[in-house]
Image (tube, rainbow, N blue to C red; front, side, top):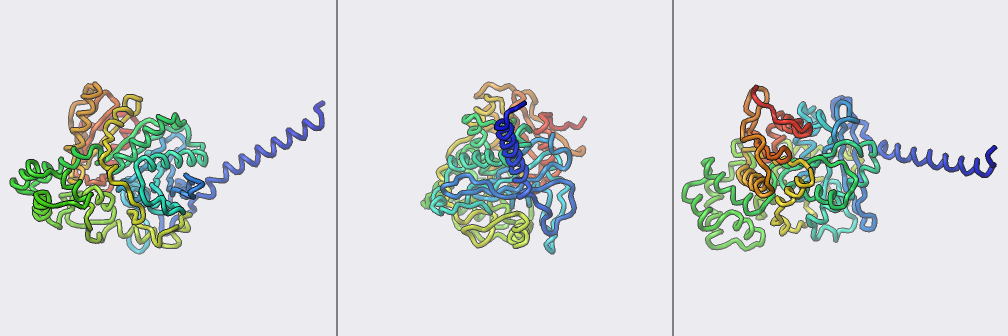
Length: 460
């Protein structure tokens, strides 16, 4: 017979373990969204809330998580990071691109038939602090935000999130994003590997990404010229007198003058204010989803953006009942905005090349996809394609799938090339800088193939 003291200790241990399990299992319940105002009925679960990434500075990042429509336990987990730097993954990625709902008229949410949660559990993160509903109560944090800080906080977020949702720790994990996500995504993936954090990272996918400052920005000249947006003489000036990376650098430093100022004025005049540079084929209907690329495009004062889904998203996320449903708080700001008006990002970080990080990830066995909406002139496909091709040669990867068209519903959806079955490049035909916004169905096909490690569909 066991001693009475042993029985008492065992009973205490059981009670403590039971209470711990109750706390762990109840934490996600506190973040569960019963229903968003105006949403249609759905069968999947949604969660949102905060993960504290720095207790001493009281810095917390806001997330919105949607489980896969079917069998979430077996589906991969996809993290989405929008660019900017300083723009919202919730407002852009979730509500304007590939989340389950998009704001319609009369405060109603419309179901997105091409939501990425048809293929995965999708986690949208507003990062760094100061973006969207994410915050730091120590406002000095906002004075100089860097890529290193952002990557570190994003990793701390993931560690906290997996503690809150341990059931997803064993799922295949992918990091995705676009635009300045060309920095956020590979830098976070690299940090996961360097710190040997126990996350089941399988791959990264980045759309129209900033990977190498000079190559990406200078590819704009050829893109503008080849699409008839600028004259032969202005193209010559952009290649021989002052290239666009120099113009961009001078604007960033507040020192645009001389020949570079003249060439930039020619460029502005010829392209005109009536072309959406994020999709050169669209009629002008600029929405706030495009704000994430404005930092990449130019730093000078821009006119207020209006109309379309971005405005509806801003209006929706600023409704009190929506914020309550999302368990979101406005701390240090008077309203939610697509891109942060409080953080001061160190723009020298834009010149940090991330293409070498892609190489290190590939060498570590992490699959890498770079994709481009082919109507984007801000980060054109020509620069991205040349960077990926150059990387493949540098690290000795042979072409395993020659450059060819891929298809969606018997129509050409883009072109693709694969190197060593681990590094790939793809275009999405007819897509803008925010590819899932303008080509949602083709983007979903691309995502599905990437997550499954399969080739993009061919005509046969």
